[in-house]
Structures are given as structure tokens and as C-alpha cells.
Image (cartoon, rainbow, N blue to C red):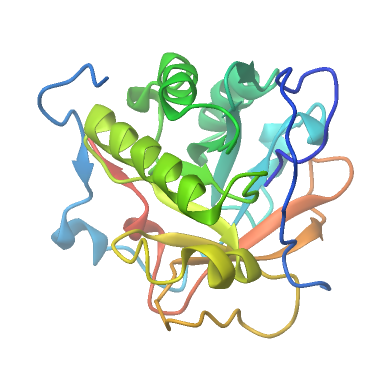
Length: 249
């Protein structure tokens, strides 16, 4: 996922990175939940051998031809970058959301979490941009950097943010991170969450606490019809499928 490149669109804040790259190679407004996880009966009507692969995109993919993307057998779900930190809104988010759904793809979004911005400010940025009534997939929180503070301070801020998002939307978000970052900072702390784990290698990621994860982002250099240049690709682990990340309306 994309939130690490510094450019004119990035929040005006000093971020001291203590980032672990994926292994090299290859105040809430709702008193009641407004959405709920997909029902168990519906999940098991989905063919586990279909809808296996997906992508995530941001402004770095430029103009995307979504009508062509939908014809690629390696794309059955899409995550779009929506927001980052205090105020950044990805300039392609609204277009990609509209056109990807118009093409018939299952679409979700993600927020890139900044350890240097207070959780309340990030929460306002994310929730003022993202309406889950326009989404098909459980939202993702992209967690890649710890910043210059302590690991304890980082986890306190992340926990507050995750809890606010869950209470607001009525659904627990998915966490995206690399296997290295998970093992160093998150292992044993967020075991009730679903994960997309990044590791760019042929071998499946190994997590120190043996937690099961739903998706594996296995490359940042995928090629998909309708997208110029490289794109992040992911797949479901064998025991999971599209129904596990759908929002039930």
C-alpha cells in the first residue's frame, strides 16, 4: 500500500521513519452500528476457488481504465487509498471509487496511519472522507511506521484510532502491515483483528505468534491490464475468501 512516499500531497508534518519494509523480493457519531459483518450463511455460498486475487491502488497508479481492469482474471477486489494522517485525501480516491464500482468490482478503502498525528485528527480525516454506504469491503488501516516515539506510545495511539473507527462504522477494520513490522511491534497485541500481511517473496509470511491472516500482499510490482506501471497484488489465504472481507448491508 502507498503512504510512504513524501511529496507535495503529503501532510505538512515531520515524520521520523522507523519503517520495516516487507521482506525483500518478489468522538463517534453513531450510537448504534450502521453495518455488520457479512452473515455466515452468505459467506459459505461464495466459491472459495473464485475471487482469489486483488489489488490496491493510489495516486501513484495514475489514470486507471477500470473497464479494462475488470476483465483481468487477477482482479476480483480492489482497495483504494482514501486518506493519510491529518488531512491528506488521495486525489484519485473519488474517481477510482466511482469508476471501479461502476465496472462491477468489489471495492474498499484504506487509511495510512501516521504515528506523529493524534488519533482524533486522523479519525476526522478518515471518517469525513469515507462513507461505508459506498463501500463493499471492510476498510483497512495501513500500519507501516512507528515514528520517533516509543513502541508503547505508538500502540496507544493506534489502539485509540482503531477503537474510534470501529465504534463509528460499527465494524472492526482490517490491519495491513508487513510481516517484519508485525513481528517487531504488533505480535500478540491485536489478535482479534483480521490482517493483510505484506511479504514480497515466494514463501508465505511467518508471524511469530502464528496468528492466521486473511490476505497476503505478495508483490508491489504486479502488472494488470488497464493500469500503467506496477501495482500491489494480494491474494486470500487458502482458508479465506471474498466473503470474509465483505460488508453486509
